[in-house]
Every structure is written in structure tokens, then in C-alpha cells.
Length: 210
Image 1: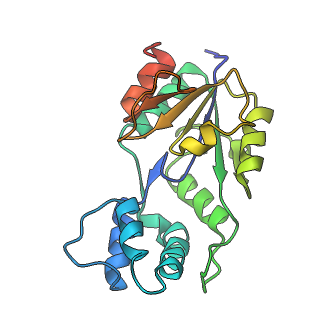
Image 2: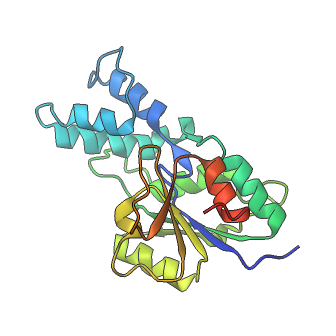
């Protein structure tokens, strides 16, 4: 089976969720209370209120995206979506704005290598897994480079959790843009679809439920 679909997907906070990892790491550093139960964004907002909070937040990010990534998990439904992509013969690309090293990370963990190792451990590149060639994974140093890569790959769809990527003036036209957002709303003039779950993303891509 072959398909003309060329599906680009962001990595951090789109395929993989770090909410539990951020909470656990922040608690262990005394940055949030034991009973705090917010999302990654809520953790960030709380930490930024602390003295030197911005540095504390960036340091935490470096840990979570590096050494802490092993404890991260895929969003519910992303597994089913990738399995459907393989069954339908789609070309899948992971395109992420990810620096090589984290800010204020004394361990200097290579964040790109950590992400590749995380994907490899979960069968992304195996023939009996999701069957995505490792050559289809791209880490870019800037948002401009990320948008340019999406254009070069001639994606038919691109899925991201950041609105600013999808509305970037340089974002190529003719691509079905999907904002993965649990809280987002679909505006009438929006250039992208808003989908709060991977199940709904799957329906939009494969079943024409735009």
C-alpha cells in the first residue's frame, strides 16, 4: 500500500508529553509544593515567580529534555496514529526546533541524541515498530530553520502544539496545518485546524473530518 501523504510532526509536547517529568523534577528540587498537580506550563509559570525563577526554569528544562527524557511518555493516541500512518503507507517526518544542548545544563547532555534514543527505545525506527527511517528525523536550531525544513520536505500535513509555528509568515502554503491543543478553539479565519486529541487528529488526516 502506498500513500501520497507526507506527514510532519513536531516532537516535544506534541508526540511526547513531559508533564509528569516536570512535576517530579520540580518537586525534587523544591521548586513546587508536593501537592502541586499542574501541567508543564503551570509548573513553568509557578517557577518563574521565584527569585531567579527564569534560570531555575531553564535549568529544569535542560534536565527534563536530557537526562529526564527516559521518564517521558507519548501522548495518548499518538501510538495509534503512527501505527495507522505505517498501515496507510504514509511518509512520516519528525521536525523539531531543538538545540543540541540545554541552557544551564551542567551535565551537557546532547538533547538531540537523547531524543533519538528515546524514539529508538520505543520502536520508532524498527521495521516491526513504526517503521520511520531515522533519516526522517530533523532537529533544527531555529524556528526559521524548522519552517524551512517543513517546506523542503513537501509535507501535506504538519502537526504542532505551537500556534506561532503554524502562523509563521514563512510557513508554506498548501499544507494542512493542525494545532494540537487541549485548550485551543477553532477561529473562523484560522489557517489551521485545532484538535485536542490524537484520535481527532487521526480522524482529520485519514477520515476527512476537518
